[in-house]
Length: 423
Image (cartoon, rainbow, N blue to C red):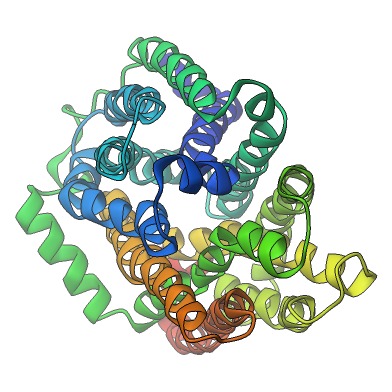
């Protein structure tokens, strides 16, 4: 397995794959006005597409795929996932109805569920505890880059060729990448049994037992799930800016894309690099770092929802909203990985993803879309503003869990094992 001798090259390759995954996933956001109009769907149906569809798929696949990644070839699992989601991204461009789009997006999510659990395990193996935050931050930079590029594509290539052609092109690129990935082997069959994950049912029980008896880890996971309500607000941000702030759809799509690229990517790098450095100096390690990031960004993010478009307060808060979630990905994931035994990392990551998709991205997006429709039907002024503000407040509430996790880490450190030392 010669490729493991170049961790930086592996990380760069995984970043490219993650970038593609996030573009494919978030193209619905960049084309939200066009797709809603083309397929004649409601706000609630749109919320279902960008939220609940993913949960249905993740519930069927993510924990299973995560447990496989703790036992078998992670590169083959990733390759199969890339192939499935890319083929179904192409199929998304063929959808003529809400039902057809739901089916295509279900299998896009199923394929993407293979990527993060296997990658977290790989990065945990290739990078030391002192560098994992940086590695995680760079990998998860694919999220802001993917979101940003999806909006840029919608405002440029998509504006000229349409949303369907954009989905077709992305699907073709992904299939090629999947075929190339099959050349890289990750043979884990020769590993001692205690270094590999257990069969799926036994593995899930072990992970649930770990969470029950490890307060710091369970609090970190809870905070990580809660902060994803920031992404519920992001899903409705373009609609909010167009319908209630009077901004042009194509212009704001490009602007969101550029700011997401700049400040989301900066958040990933800063959160990873600064998180690693601060974690070695602060009591509570990465848990304390994540709590500090939320506390610093909370005020400008709330002020942004009330500010006049175009003002410095407006853009400061918008940029803070792009920076913060990605800053938490580097520091937060490093903290979780450092608290988790190596043989459970993919399964724990898949459980974390399942909770994120069930409680935040699925229920959150559906309820948000439903709330907008209900408030609009009852004549409530600016219903989208109320929904995105509520999403921000829920995300900011994650600071409570991160702070409690930091306290739990401090309490354990007197008799900490080496795996906790970098937490």
